[in-house]
Length: 374
Image (cartoon, rainbow, N blue to C red; front, side, top):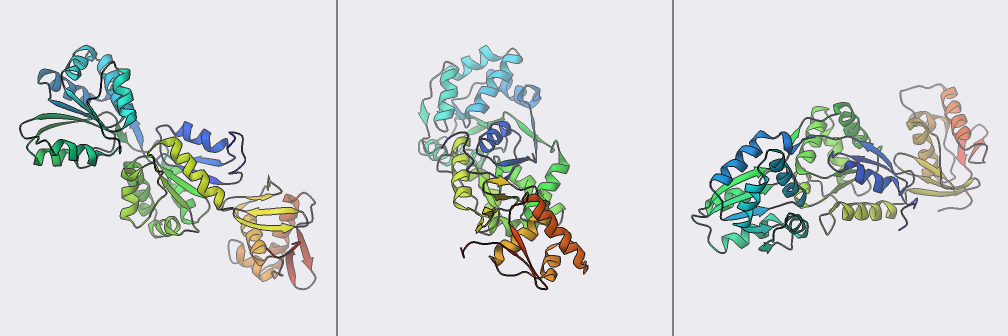
């Protein structure tokens, strides 16, 4: 797929993450998507995390037997935080003397970038595989340090402690409140009203915060319904850990085979491309009606949400006449003034720039100028 592809032209995607959101947005925008940023949480930088440095000093004074590295970015952040505090050299010495267990190739790559070697790698990239590996050997009496991502332990700490290990947990970055609460509120309402095509989740705490915001706004039921409906809004999660809070609400999100940002983009693009939207062949060209936009011969029409609702109603009728009363029903409010319907149709025609998209049927209403049934 070409980076300049218009595969997602007119699609609206909401991003709920803050970390790497620019990268994800760029990948979607290159394909024509409209991207809304609604970070549900902020990231507390590792260099400001006093608890991380305190735990690091404890490990340096009492070195562990095993160190579990769960994320490459987290491990790199740990080294950077230690370096900023003047602890990089003793930390690296500690790591050289321990058995290093990596959760997947990215964690192994970060270990190698620090001049170290991973002793064992979980190729499935799951904490469960690491847990099973360590417990299969007996961890009783062993000191184990586990470097976590921002969502915490994923249960592995408790399992290792139950096996008799002395576990020290390190969270390299922590979550704070949303930097833009208004954007989050707008996002949950957009999903509830099905005014977007997809919403992405890149961390489990972010998914929890999104659902909590929907609950606070009184639209959780509508959000769950929209994200659960195969014809509704796609929920896309970067991996199974991130997907867990959604699944707990009965939402089955798109999850790529490989838990990577690039794989998430490819999976989402493929699904959105398959959902072509409502398509009608008209005298003005092919009309494509998506959740948040409409395209006429590949050109995005300048429509308000009410104008898009009216156009969708006409497209669904597929050339059949829609009465003025039907047009009024698609508009917000409860107006019975037929002039409001006439104004809405006039604006549709303006958006079509003179192309023959909508025809007036005298004394009956309006219809699209379809070429054939589709």
